Image (cartoon, rainbow, N blue to C red):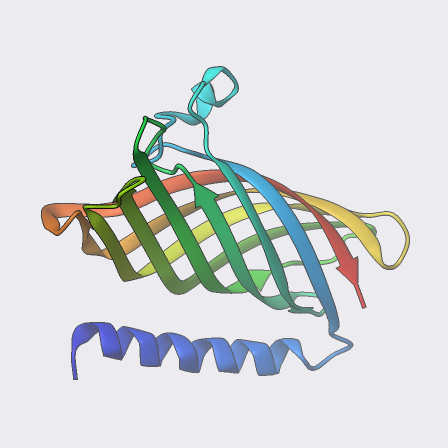
Length: 197
């Protein structure tokens, strides 16, 4: 059994346990469409502080869904960033992340601060277009950590904002070349609506 397989099996077991725990004790389901921008690491904007002035900032769109009770929660998040490695003529790139996260999300009236951590897929795609003579697509196991704040207006509708850090376990591969010792990593600042049901 490879190290990646062991990590995946442990992650699935932990996520199943947390999901079962979150489903008890008046858990509520939620769905949360998000918009965000990547920064730092391998993204086209080098630092969070320069995000507002960065001309090459990468728009990130996605959705998360899951459940939470008064203390714990679980979410599955799917997010996509086009032009992740920058914009230039004839060059196309993207990053897709699919993360299962455990959340510590205590209820303090209508406000819910939260911290999260999880594992999942980080898929990169790089090609030279329009002919796509060179094309590279990689699936990597990765992890993410983050934190933020939810504020609810009534029982079922709210907003949330957070900052997350993503990091792959395997070395980054671009156009068939492995960059040894360099794993895909980046941060993301995001905002979202939250609908509880």
